[in-house]
Image (tube, rainbow, N blue to C red):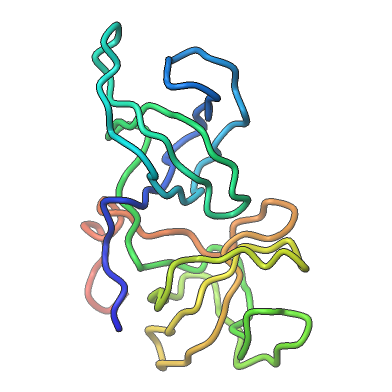
Length: 167
């Protein structure tokens, strides 16, 4: 089973408001931060007064739902590639408290997501099952820590274009 790019999952490029209603400028539920992964659950629908495409979606990390304007400036399609932004560990299980370490991921290493990210409620962590590009090690790694630290950064289309073969 292979996870591929999705037209239903997007990565936030910079902070944007997640709003309660379809209409732009409605009450803000919370702010989507750079690097957060979002699943589109409805839309895109054109907003008549602005001409913008609005979508309803769910934040993968905390399940919060709301409306936001989907543009190429604010979001880009999620891809199953991540780059280690801060050293973290690949574990043999999702629940970090019961899992054993497979190995440490070093900053700059690339991994491929084998499933979409999931939220480990007990630990308050966004985790994803990955395969390390360097040696094929498989397990669960933390995407975002419980204090918001990004451990694995999604590799976007722009990043892939600038990436050289051997890295």
